[in-house]
Length: 92
Image (cartoon, rainbow, N blue to C red; front, side, top):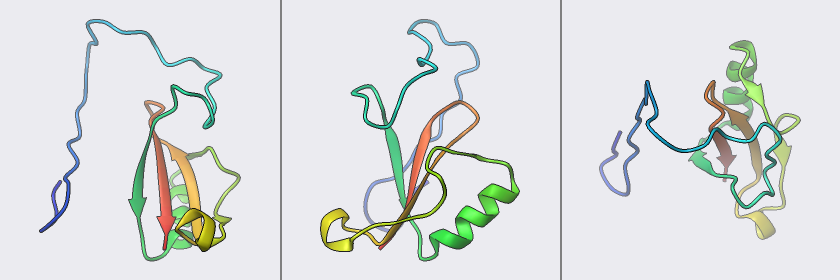
């Protein structure tokens, strides 16, 4: 996916990985191996509701308010896709 400017996102699906190790089951967001994709939305509450309705696994307890001066955004939610990839949804 690509917008008119800026970086794009390429979605890959590896049906049979040839090497590598599985993601540890006990990984946390503050571990060095943690990786997340950040997506900016105008309404993180609405997106979070749709994701909850779709039974997406939340890593965060829900939408979390953040001090914009410290984090650079006002609200966020961290979710995981079915393969365990984390996605940070933020609202500026």
